[in-house]
Length: 183
Length: 183
Image 1: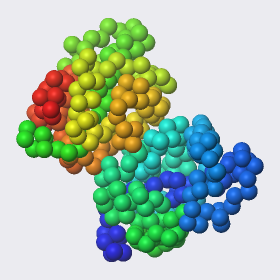
Image 2: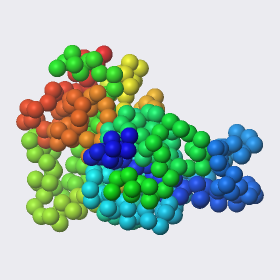
Image 3: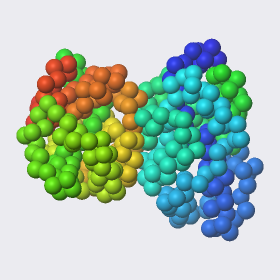
């Protein structure tokens, strides 16, 4: 599988929890709003919604995440992400493929974030979508097993707390492993 | 070719000049801004930029089109577009695939327009991109021969004034012809 992935010409990268540490900000905002003390360590094998007692809480969480600006100031996920992405971008055709239609207020934030933080990427190669079955690419690096199931190319699962138990896809745990795989 | 297109399961539709009459608003705004009297009839075989004397004018036009709200109040291209789209949507998997990354301020406008004007479409199937080679779909209906060349499925060219001389793709001239093709 490793060789097949390495032979790719086009690689699509998901944003949330692959390029940006979205969970970090989600926890901060949710803890503040609901007066909770959730940590990343508690998220192993779970989703945020598992910790919210009612549908009302889940709806409120959704509204918090869909507020304008939420996705504008996210931290890049690892200190080496930018440099490795730059190198990969010089050797492969890189796409950014991020689910944004369920959080429509994230569209502009995500676009501006990418232009500012990864200005070497071609904006012509950004894809803001919902279901990633629409993505035409050799490889997709994503933290969502569901999206990788829908995708028709080769899926690479980027480890996130919630997906640690998934065994269906080739897994990378961090950007050093992404570098090992593609460079 | 007609039978091959009809056998499609997934159809992606471009927005500008296929679903929305974007040129109509462009002409209105440009005429007002530059004190010109351009008409659709003059656009046959031409692009808007062919009528602007300097790069400065072209840049100004781009700024006008990229202003927030420009894409929010566009007219639907034909009176029967909504009904035909609804029927096609009940028989095929319909995607909306619109180039928005070069006009980033259009992202939110286009999303809101689609939700309001074609609320029966799945927002999970909206794709906001740049280069349409990223689109995985059996068919793409688009007015841009360039995008249809990049697309890897079957291209259907929707007639626009600027593309009237193109002979490379299967052509539809209006939504009645789209209905004849797919329904």
